[in-house]
Length: 152
Length: 214
Image (cartoon, rainbow over all chains, first blue to last red; front, side, top):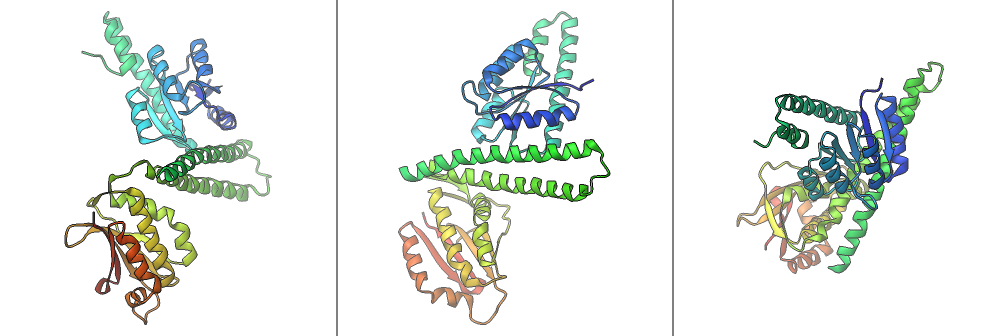
């Protein structure tokens, strides 16, 4: 039984395929998308627990993927892993709701810790949202899934 | 300025490419290590040696990534004509970028941590160029095994400055005298004067001061 599901999005195929193998050896259920567009399709077909996305990609870039994923799949936590990041990019990603912003190359243990923390946050949010929904407060439940806390 | 912007832009783009290459090397070496651990093959005669090699690759990738990150931020320096920045961060960046210069001359470059920020509003490329040029001048004069300790400070007049304090292994002729009598010293002073930067020696401290006048 795999621990949790991660969709990895990166146009550097050699990198993402190798990382995929390493994550699978660590009992993570992984899948790979080589572009932002492919990632959006895979998100629709089978939403993961965590999305691990590169920043700069041809076509739909990582920020756009982050934005769309947070909008359409608020339960999915997004971790950005990039070799291209500037401070401004990081600030923008945080504004858009990224769980964590990491820079390549990164030790696998650090990456695993971050992904597990993102998954834990997803579970916690889902539990709190469920308790609001049980009380009939669906609006707050939605806000929690999207922003981590109710608006009011 | 257009030329430096272009150089910076291309260098920055290339550093991103190198980072991706380093990431692939790290993951590939990591995967090889993972497979070795998973196989639990005690008969593999060079298992420990193999592990050591993998560790070495990992450490060097980390070193490469640090260098590339510093090079990337250096490549963005020409993006600003004038920038208000802490001289401590200029020192941090230039310490790594002058590593080769340090090794070639057998001289250790060090930074004395200054907990106080010393802000300088100036052309960030010129301040770095000045520091590098002075290090380039001083390093061969100090001799192998010597140390150059760099510190951000302020002059008596409150002008942002960098102090380069020299500790030499060999004694004898005064280092400051050696600097002052060097044929290039005068032209270096003139070169920086045109940039509103003054360089001076401080015999009592065995130091060279770079004062960023304006």
